Image 1 (spheres, helix red, strand yellow):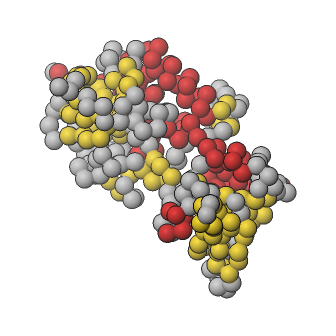
Image 2: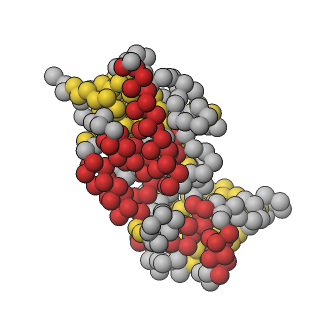
Image 3: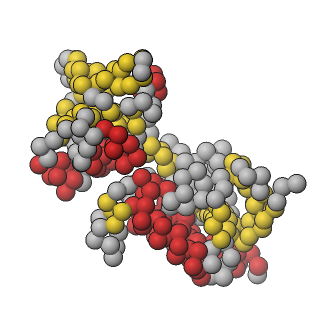
Length: 314
């Protein structure tokens, strides 16, 4: 027989938005339950140096998330290591089913499921995932010490990954389909000054090259989007860094979404298209996508939930 838990506020997700919502919902005496999901701590657990968190000149991403989890717990938030696999928002109380078999019912729900890395969708990319192809430099960069590496992308993610990988690689080739980067200027300046990084402009990845026995990457083939010229770049590791997509699978068919799956919230607050359901962080933010803005939205979602519950009781 499955266990059933009821809470006034169920928080789904455990990045900066989720943990901050846990802090504020706890302060409001709502006794929230937070279900961490498949990646406890969210994307910051795969980030190295965080230099833009107020009050911390530099802190490791995983360390910051440990602090945030501890803060939420200290305030009274119950944190559960489970994964929500089904969510029924058709009536209140809302019902969520955990992978553990536990059923969670809630008077209000805060969605803070974040976003995940995007892939190019190439057959060769899929073939070599885990065998030289990765979307997480902080997870896998260590394995390519003394090797040549390729990074695909041109935004903040790609530049940060390329810079980080210079700690291990002898050479990092950054392949970008345009002739200029879309990253922050401070990051671009660091990249251009780094002698280990060579940009390959106006190129698009066509195929990851590799061996079968044992399975492993040997390089990539890219095509110049202006001239059609083919370039083969030797590499033992290929890091895909083309951004992220919202993790909205649980609600994409029941909540209003836009911009490829981002949950729509009302202007000025975190309310979604279903009363009592709130969204915060990268799940809804397709513009800023920063840890600090996610935390701010987590605060907003908890305050919005508190107000909703108070009005519901009137």
